[in-house]
Image 1 (spheres, one colour):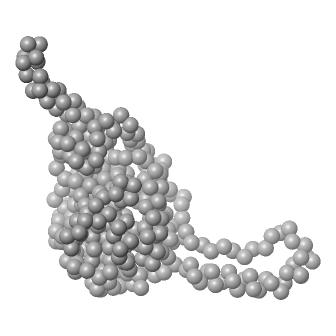
Image 2: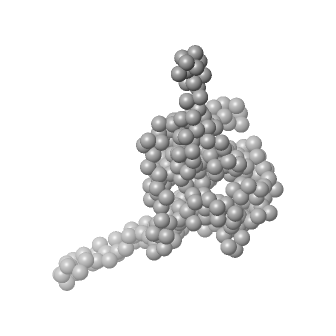
Image 3: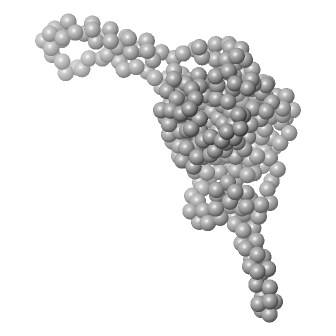
Length: 324
């Protein structure tokens, strides 16, 4: 007690550090889970200070409602493929019509069918085609640390714009606006960027950092809201929704949150947001994962991110999925 009175500030700092360390441990798999997805583990106390820097405050652990969902029940196995979301309305006639009604309506039936045929032609799915690197000259890439790697090692021209940041999540894009320093040195939010400049294509890959937050359903609904907002700000852009890249076998086996079962459940939900007309589903896992679904060991050094030379595989895949 005598020492506490003699050095009150020292004991206050020690007590604060102890409390923050405890919060860092308690929130390791929930509030601060995203910091474990980016590579080497982060000490508990450092997680709290890094979270404060990113706008995640210690007392939020009292309000966090993290759910480790049973992905087997979340898997929408009975849902249709993303390309079937835009089936145009049919022209079936009601069975309540009498013969007299049908006769009197005969003159207008052909017109109705013609109008429906025109609608069908407008919403037919568009097909992918092979493109070259110039296709990305008017493209915007949105994503987390994996997209940062694509920016650094993908060999894109200076005209390609990247709105990418380590630990970026779907929850940050508009509701807690993130301001990034662009290639020209200016700092912009995503909304400012989309209001000031037009893009022919917008590529999005987000989701690895969100695995420890909410459920598959709540994540999908948040993603839907973000896509709708982007469509409002960039109505003429073609949107490419990219699957969350899977992790390596060691990470999959050892991590209760950042594993391929949870990733696959969310990818299946996200694929339903594409319509093959304005929003297209892309799955780069096809070229960076083994037949068993794991990130190929030679392609990664940390079980999460690609090595520099393998970002070209991702880019080459995108060039086989152009929309013109």
